[in-house]
Length: 96
Image (cartoon, rainbow, N blue to C red; front, side):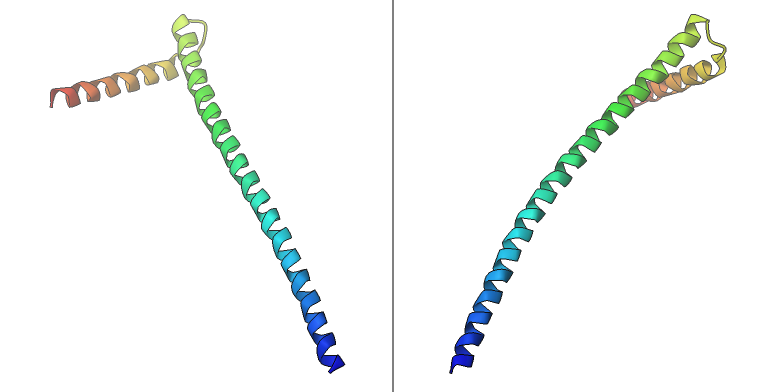
């Protein structure tokens, strides 16, 4: 009978250990999920910032070319033609 009692105590100890590990891992998982969400949000903000800065860079390139100081007039002409085509498409859609 003492073997049975010892086995029960051993089982209880193992069960307590498992529950303790479960709670620890559950808390750690929650922290990692929060960190992942935070990092994803930061990544999204950085991507948005990069897109905005690229747009500003492109506008600056066009402005410098129009100013006449740059030798990149071909790119500016292509950009202007692209903008004109977009405007034409918008006008056509408005008339439909």
